[in-house]
Image (cartoon, rainbow, N blue to C red; front, side, top):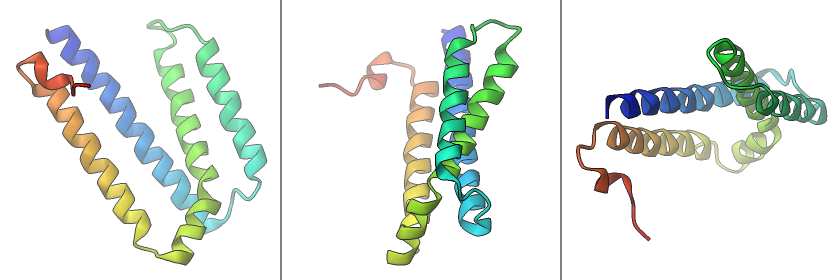
Length: 126
């Protein structure tokens, strides 16, 4: 139905936003080494996640919850900085390959969920 497709568009848009914000956070950490206190960044991400789950979902808090989700995604991305530095030391092409593969798979699933006429395409089977 149209309302289901609209809901899916919003869900996949928020997933895409989180993916790009996490990538931006990881880039900021790897390039600038600004967030070297990964324990504090992890606590900040955990705090945002708890705050997000404790905030009720309604029209008035929708933008606030999206901001909390965006902050959580960014901080999670910055927390991946040390792991990404190890990957860069091994083979720098791992990171863009993983990012582009994830983005391609995400895009394909999103488009199939949004534009499939038959619901049978949405279920992948056992």
